[in-house]
Length: 124
Image (cartoon, rainbow, N blue to C red; front, side, top):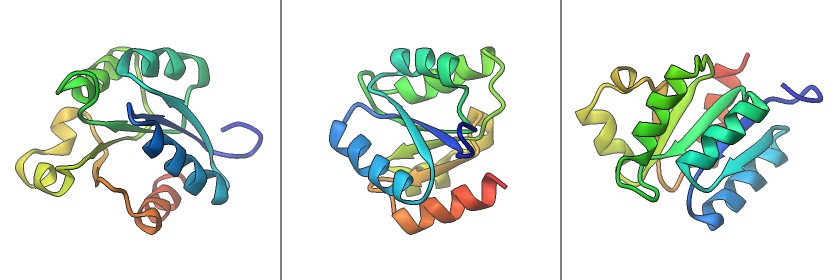
């Protein structure tokens, strides 16, 4: 938390998605830190210690998101981690999110109302 606001770290290689999510988060009273790659995401994570993390599944490498989550675990992350994927609904039916170290999976494009509901529920 920074300045009384929850900090959300969003790792996504598409700048349009980052810009869109920033608008939604900031309009609802959250702060957003961002990174365009898993590697940059780890650096930002270490700097900002976010309250919640959203990471794209497929970035510079097909499984960059899952590799990022494994690295977070090794760094002792305790913040909830959500995977964002264009195959989100299918992914959540075929894998156990908890087995990957995830709190949940969002479908791309993300529904702003669903996102804010989840944030309010998880970040009490």
